[in-house]
Image (tube, rainbow, N blue to C red; front, side, top):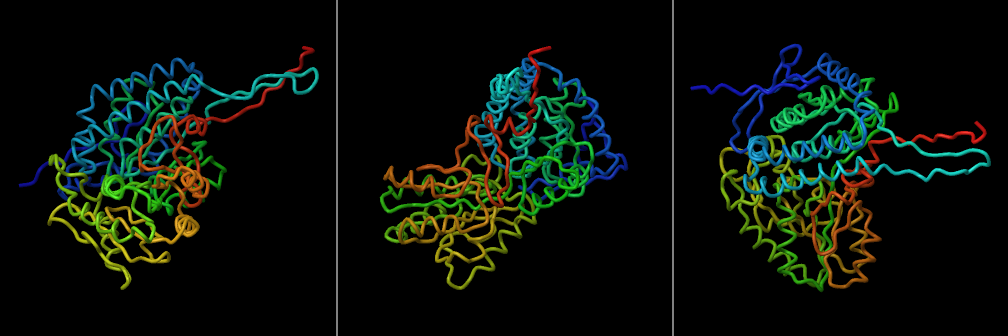
Length: 479
């Protein structure tokens, strides 16, 4: 007996709409492997309509006062709190994440981040006005850039949508946002919430696949393209945006080094690192999945980490004992399995290394040791619940190994030696360095990387400024 699938729709100019040509794609719950909805597979006509709606709304939204934009964002934050259970249910269906952790670890930060950007709307900064040339006064205007084309990923579809729309709207821009084709449900619900508060056309959602995103970035209307995704996707966006010199904001992959020195409390370090490595099934650009341990404590650390991994549970969303749910889609499961299948002979699987269950896309907490710096699993992002362990001899080698990848998003150092921690925080070539912790983020501090992890910042005043442009105004004092 077949079950009728729920129909998700685009949100354009204040209205929910199907794709202009009626095309759809099935949306699958990764915990069950079964389809639960259909979503529009949007094409050029849908992208045109969304961009037109955003462009029409831009002058009016640009000319609102910061206080008005702040008020709207505070209403959105309040609405998120009021409808938290609906948001959790949509996100869990999207991703298969544990219900309890989604409720406690995602909703409060999202609400806080929206409220932060509501405040940032009223804190526009620029150099002070002054007479830098005799008889002339100069000052700086900070203005919104215009229509923003935004593409969100599938690992945190709801939270990453917030990281996209909140600073853009706070700065006075209008938005066309595309969720991943595998996780559109929570973003469509966000459209319903924002649509009840914002003027028509300020926030638009277009569902679709990679081609839909390409159409958005190549469209002549947006002044800026922002994407959180893979390095390959970021390179494609940057290339497309270069054709008409759009601004580009990229938050891409990561391969975070976790540098553990010999003076740490092994039990405490393992507890923190295992949680930061396996949370969200390791599907996090900042996940603590590449551990570098001093040779004198390497074996002890590996043994303790393997034991910790064996005690971590993955399973269905309503199981309160699980730390993480499934991988997001069958392609991602295949990617993780491929890394393990291709391990070199010198590698050792200390824990896990296998699929869990016969439905959904679950993978066991995995630990791999005996690896060399040039091994594929060290150099490439796995994006799964797999923690690798290497040993190092001294601080210089630790830095060499840590920096010896193409990614540069996040890192951490574990030591009781303050001076060493300070030296490492300077030497590590990553956009974030945590000391004796890994993965916490706060709205006030920037998140973003270097090298192939992209450029531009999310969160913080720096993230807000990325959605503004600076204009110099000079006036004669002689009239």
